Image (cartoon, rainbow, N blue to C red):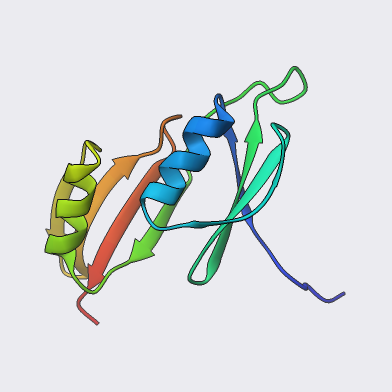
Length: 115
């Protein structure tokens, strides 16, 4: 078996709102199949967005958290503030973190690592 590609799929309530959100934080729309599924790409990751349906009635990601690396934590914080995205900042041995959520409550974070 060979894995050719991979993505993380997030269940969402509003495709247009979610696509716009992920584009606002730096993702590029790869593909979109109407209101059925969308793929957005960032460095080293593809996120799939899938609308909630009768077969899949959950939103958010439960205990999953998706992280993105940044070189400039201050610039990243400023960009999220300009987008009116609520954040929580944290520093620890591994680096500086900015925690936030997408429109459906999926936990996301930026990290400026110390390594």
